[in-house]
Image 1 (tube, rainbow, N blue to C red):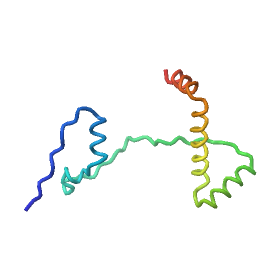
Image 2 (cartoon, rainbow, N blue to C red):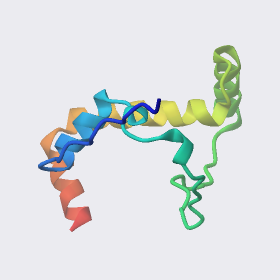
Image 3 (tube, one colour):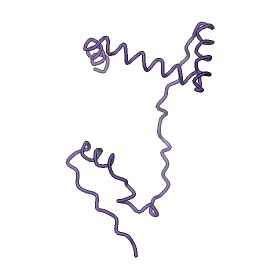
Image 4 (tube, rainbow, N blue to C red):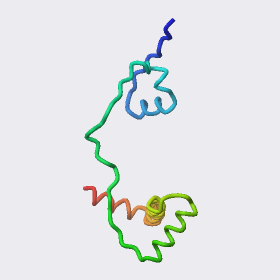
Length: 105
C-alpha cells in the first residue's frame, strides 16, 4: 500500500516558508523516487581569487599554526580575516554601516 505524502501548506511570505522548511523534511512531502538529477551549469563561483604578498616570516607562522590545527593555511588565513573583520565592524559600529550604505548606493 502506497503511503500518502503530506500536503504542503500555503505560505504568506518567504520567511514563513523558510521557517517551515527549517523544521520539516522535504521527504515527508515529496516522493524521492520521482526526484531527477539536476545541474546548474551557469552558476558562478562564490569565491574570488586574490594575490597577497606576505612577509616570509608571517607566512611561515601562518603555515605552522595551520599545521598544528590540521587545516590548510589558506583556510586559516580566511578564518583570521573573517574574525578580524567582524571585530573591526563591531568597533566601528554605525560609522561602518553608513560607509557601507554609501558604497552600495
